[in-house]
Image (cartoon, rainbow, N blue to C red; front, side):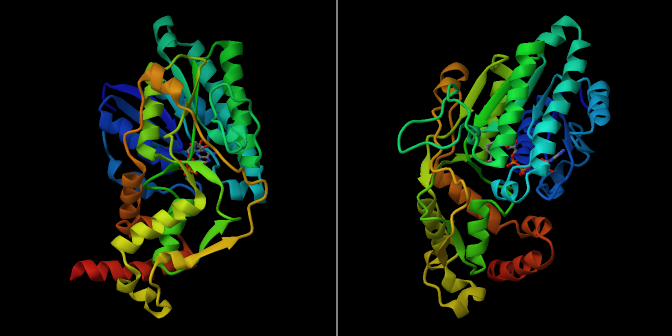
Length: 371
Ligand SMILES: NC(=O)c1ccc[n+]([C@@H]2O[C@H](COP(=O)([O-])OP(=O)(O)OC[C@H]3O[C@@H](n4cnc5c(N)ncnc54)[C@H](O)[C@@H]3O)[C@@H](O)[C@H]2O)c1
């Protein structure tokens, strides 16, 4: 550990966490203690290059483990905590919400109690600067009609077990601020995309299915709308909220980038047609594909599928000076390029048969680049 400020990050081996830990370390201002249980959604490879880095410490453990969490506060005396660890996949929460309640609700409560005990023990000036930054989602607000946006004033109306568990965690964070004065801040962000996202989520799923000639499943008629933000822009907003935000406040974060699911899938197909044309991909020869769009299949809609999410990020823009830096086309191209060039990462998160097809289907690109 160096003599910079030390912070705890939970869930640093997940999608947003890995991008976030990297941002904190690269900023040069922080020592990071990453607490992660390494569930199926984690990939230690995402941060493998930070192993042994003087600003980085990894602790494998569960946020519901009160003794462990308390010992980390005691040992590292952090200036704050960024709480990202969560069960995050809506479809999984529909099958079974038990882990969502444990991690998202009980885990958040456990962190809050440990943070409160630690915060109470701090001298006044460190008490004033300590922050508990809770990373949440716009899904807690439910679904929008064709018009309007979510703001910090939007009432909560979660529709899935995932969003219900996140909503509960937000309420506990709010209550710990109002009841005990814990300097907590909540951020609610729209859908993120970018490198290191587990391939069960929409964008990586479409990219990886496409290059292996598998169907591209689109829920319902594809008209659901999501407001997409490049993950690095989200990470910068979270860092800014921690450094400049006001305790007790909520900041909603989004890129003003609404896309219908079907349009997004079309965009992915069109970029792939350009950078990895099906005619040049050996495993696709037999299928005789001319465009990846031919792989699109509409499938039965997800139960309770929210129609539209959109964020009005005026407050964080106005009060903290945040704005997204990566445009959608550029971000999508970067993301596609990243997945095409990191087969070992994809392989690591994929086990058994899934890993096998990934290996097989990536062979074409390696052969092409070796020429
Ligand atoms: N992905 C998005 O589009 C999005 C948008 C807005 C907000 N969020 C929020 O951001 C946070 C991170 O999301 P993500 O997409 O990176 O999630 P993710 O599923 O990719 O990663 C979650 C990480 O948390 C860890 N984890 C899970 N349960 C744990 C536990 N009990 N103890 C310790 N670690 C545990 C996992 O091992 C994994 O590394 C979540 O709180 C999510 O609700 C995500």
